[in-house]
Length: 314
Image 1: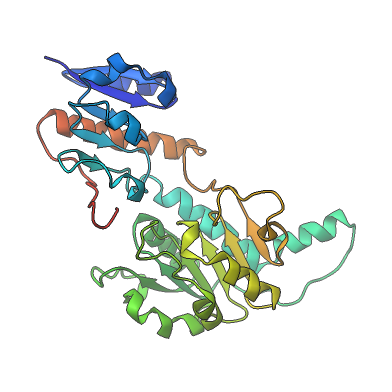
Image 2 (image 1 turned 90 degrees about the vertical axis):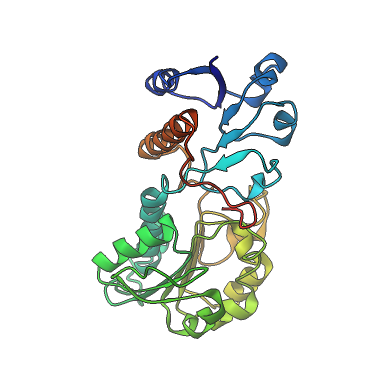
């Protein structure tokens, strides 16, 4: 008997053929959740993509969910007998490149030069800083934070990291600490980069107190989850001239509504959650590789890689 797998999302013809080649599987493709029928759900045992609670409740045979995202904290409601795996590692390099881009952009004051160009104003800005020799702290040392520091170290930065438990310190990281000891490092850092999951443990981690522990000239970069920074506190400190820049690919609320003060806050540079996802072809290919590999493992009766710990949310 073939195992029915529902694959949700828009996929290339090449990827569809790869899914269809899974041994012992009957693969059903649906671009949107509203396209999924009751017949599809009735005896499907696996689901690949962003499943909803409503869909899962109609799948009595469901035993494995493979996400196309690294973030998994919003899926902890799945029943314990359903194995949940994410796409950890597929986005690391691409998001790290985005972080590196925005860090350099803020250091070299490129947004301000773009404003001057529009005004046809030939003006030299002071206080341009070097990346080489800067101290960079990555709060979050998963695939994203680790890749960012690895790239930063190649460019001559002095790298520090914060992770849930201290273990396996990479050679390019000078010091690795837990969140309990992070405050000791913040005042010396030139860049603080966040790549945290959206768990209760990190919600509001960067409030006014921690933002003020950072140098007035420091740069904040966030590509993890918007709720790790208290938006009202960030607005307060930047309005007072604290922080050289805040480069946010994620924010709270999201999407950012029209008229929200973050849009026009000084030295706050926003992108609409574009550092990951399928927007870069290399991300898409890597995610599909992870999804297919895990589906193959489960079809063979083996454990998938990157199984999500329900208590941690990742």
